[in-house]
Image 1 (cartoon, rainbow, N blue to C red):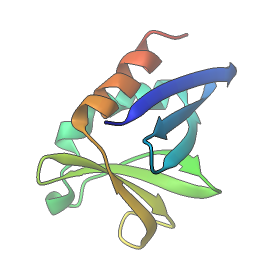
Image 2 (image 1 turned 30 degrees about the horizontal axis):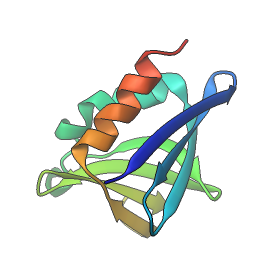
Image 3 (image 1 turned 180 degrees about the vertical axis):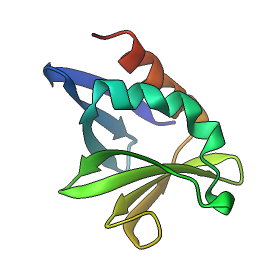
Image 4 (image 1 turned 30 degrees about the vertical axis):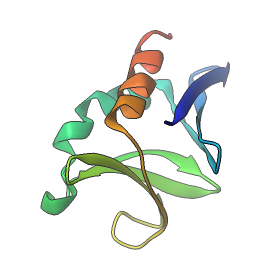
Length: 103
């Protein structure tokens, strides 16, 4: 289970907090870009498609699916990342839903 919160305190830029008991990941991105996560199922890593949305720890964030599961890749690009986290598709759907309800 991944808890999802969206804080839009910075206006058009939001902070997405993904959190479990063991880890936390904070991603900053324009709200309009987060809505694009509705297309996560089309961002097939095997076809080398990803969605470049947001930053984390000063690095770019890329979103893709691998074997039907969403993967967040943090790093210079979507092929040589420094951090990769697999999360449930429901968590990505929740981010897109929360972002779509703002603005």
